[in-house]
Structure formats: C-alpha cells, structure tokens
Length: 257
Ligand SMILES: [Fe+2]
Figure 1 (cartoon, rainbow, N blue to C red):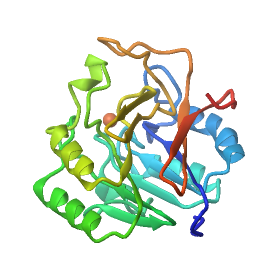
Figure 2 (cartoon, rainbow, N blue to C red):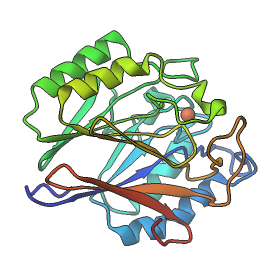
Figure 3 (tube, rainbow, N blue to C red):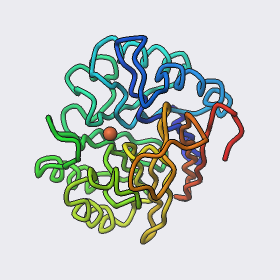
C-alpha cells in the first residue's frame, strides 16, 4: 500500500463472491468464480493500492472456496484486507486472508487515513451484530488514532438500503454504531457488503456505501431479490488526503460507472 502522506489512497471493494468448493455449483443461477474472474481486468486497470474484501467471500465456508478466491485476488499483486460475512467461517477464512478483524477490529493507518475493519458476524445468524467488546475496542482504537480521516468497513448494513429482502437481515442496533462513528467526527465513509446492490447515501458528513456482489446483484428497492442487468460488479474508492471520498463501480464491461 502507498504510505506517503499527501497521496490519494485507491481501494477496490470486492464483496459477496459466494464461491463454493463444488465447481459445478451456482449462486442464483450464476457461476461465482467466473463472476469474480471477469472483474479482474477492470480492477487491475484501476490500479488499486489495496483490496477490501467485505464478506460472503465463500458460499460454503470451505477451504477450497477461500483458496480459489485468494488465488484470484492475489494475482492482482496488492495487499488484501478482508472481513467475514454471514456465509463465512472466520476460523477458516483467516488462514487464507491473514489481514482482517480476527481478534477484534483491524486498524490500518495509511497516510492521513485510518481504515477500520469490523466483524459483524455471529455464528448461526444471518443478520449482523457488533458486540460490546468490539464496540469498546472500536471506541478505544479511534480515540488513540492520530488519523485525520476514517473509513469503517463491515459486512452488514448499519442503515436500511430500502430493499426489504435484505434489510430484514441488517446490523442489529445499527444506530448505536452510527452514533459512535458520528461522534468521532473523523469518519468520512462507512462501507459494507451483504446487500448485493449499489447503495450510496450521505449522512452527517459521512458517505455511506453498500457494495454490489461479484456474482449476482438485485435491482434496488425490491421486496424480493430481483436479478439486475449489470451483472458482476465491485466498487472503487479514492480517499483523498483532505478526507474527500470519491467512488464508483467496476463491471466486467470495464468502464467505470
Ligand atoms: Fe451476507
């Protein structure tokens, strides 16, 4: 990762790959590994300083699925930060993606920015939760950081995205997390996966972002998942030294959107 002060930090968020150990398995009728693979040229062309994997990397939490995704993303030759989703097994996933919130939040300083990765998963739950211990560690980590600007990433959406099929599995007590992030005053961006759609909102100085999936996405504002026309996609982010957040999507069609 670039570490010089004064440079814009470029990230690509890859989310909800849902790769299985069975090469013949499909996810919502799509080949998960092909979806991820189709995006790699566009990601490479963007030239990120690091990748952020925001959960549901695997469909079945198998070592084979993580090995497959790890090989794909490592081919890009940049650092990989990863956090788990409800389909993942953190205990298995961490051995393939060592940089993550495996023993509490991950804090990574990069120039003027602090990147914070949280684990919002709990065994046997589809929705998300940030427990008391992690909240305390987050508060302490933010308080001790000299960073000018902060990006926080997690799998589950802390605010509703307007799609009932996935909002019923959002982050429990999401407003408690949002209150903490707002009170810090330096959190410029909160980014999540899980929602399988492009979501963008501004709230009290923060850019809120839901990432699309690398395999199958839904049209927005749906009662039930409804496959969109975009196909596999991922999010690019540019984090400027002055705290500005710029973002858009990369698709297999390769032009930014
Ligand atoms: Fe999920």
